[in-house]
Length: 473
Image (spheres, rainbow, N blue to C red):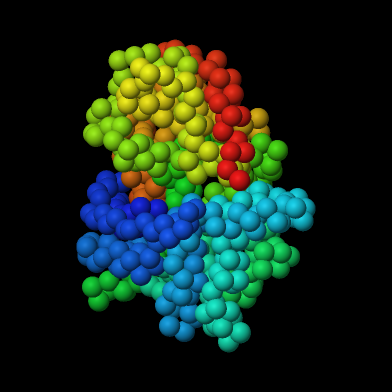
């Protein structure tokens, strides 16, 4: 049984073929353009995403089933009849609705949202983006009056357009601020609060099951799994039991820990109860989530400034750690996510001097991302017993300095599996059910042990965090 996993991410769409044995191979990767029409706005072209998904589907005839993972909180609006998008995709990084968030906080709506969803009021989630569409796009208002409007995250658009199923899986829906985490359904009171018409939203369904069929090279191929990308990576890492943790270091850094059969509210620590997955005819499995807005995006930004040319240059450093030398970077280039949820925070370097070199700056950026990730794991440890081994994936997991420093600040073993496509592997695993054999304990796993303890530097980093907050108006 061969599965095609489509990993539709923030910067690219990738196709991974996974055989019954668990052997996998990337067969196509297509990047898509990022649009920044105004400060704080981030958009994608929905037609470009659809084109890239179809191109990935058409690059092989070997597979018999499809799994798709999606960006999560990115969303748009489209026409029920034509299924043409009437807006760009408003990406999860987009912050155009910050004033709406401020207003809702002043109206004391935060407690209601946290009680029902477990999520803080933040423009990161889909609800205010969808509300912005309703308020600012005349075509959306017109279609709504005619009963022809559809609103949703990108997964619902892909499935409606390509498979003729207007649905979203429960893990993705749990990231919108519109789904009641306790019932697993859209909440009328939340939809009314944000100004999102509930009748325009897709049906919420389990993560695995019948998602319709997509035509590729004159074949009708069933879609059997749909899931948000970070939860797919959790499956791909082999995290199945309470206390299992993974961190994905992609554009941002996202940590998830499995908590079990009931949601764990941890709002006071800025952690988010979320749905990990729900298999067909099974109970919901929950997790706690914590996100850092800038990880790989901070590295890409530094490269664009000319701080380094090739990634080999930042794999090792000759000097002691930057924080030992009082040089600290706070990677709040898009604000601070968990556990602060402060969009007013700004990226900060502290400790610059006349002898600071580009390599020093890069060392501090890598360390800053580590410290932000450790803040999240420390917060999670107050609610669930974290296992000693933590699995990581994403681009930064290929950087030896980063991985070793992470192990030393965590004071835990960090595992990096040989495959860099764990999100897609998790998607394929869900799509195949028990028909794919994944070797979770690959002999090619790289393990980083905490040879030096660096937890004592957390206090210095926390001081730097305090200096970064409240900077932007």
